Length: 198
Ligand SMILES: [Fe+2]
Ligand SMILES: [Fe+2]
Image (cartoon, rainbow, N blue to C red):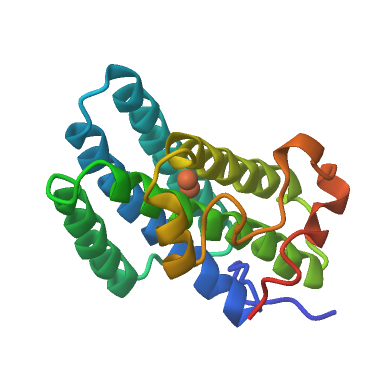
């Protein structure tokens, strides 16, 4: 019988490990960005909604870290630095670029984040690991809710058709195939985001 000397459990999937490390750091960037975004809007309801989304992102970061710890995956110092700079830069820029753009680009970013969690689920499944289905499903769906919130704020704005054409996200274009009105059950949710794969 082969016994490992070390008790370390590792995750033998390069893309998955990298995706986890990146998501962990990118969630911090998102939280920072939403701090600036919330501070830059005057409307009290918008401020509260964005603050809640910031908290959701901190929560995602904690959940991703919990998974990383189970496999002894170290936090990437490079990603932490890179996403610190990105998050703080976006946070500051929210004060100078008007009302529309922070909502637009937040929505586009969230749209892309949805598939990160379903792709993680697919990667885990390729290793026969099903235990994170629920948490990954919840995080993916939460990002979708964020996307829909930001879209709801801008969908009637005159600038949207122009931005949608330019940046390929908006009322008619999403970066994922999740429909909140008709969700797949958790067990089938690895079917999401198949066509978004690189
Ligand atoms: Fe998130
Ligand atoms: Fe989000």
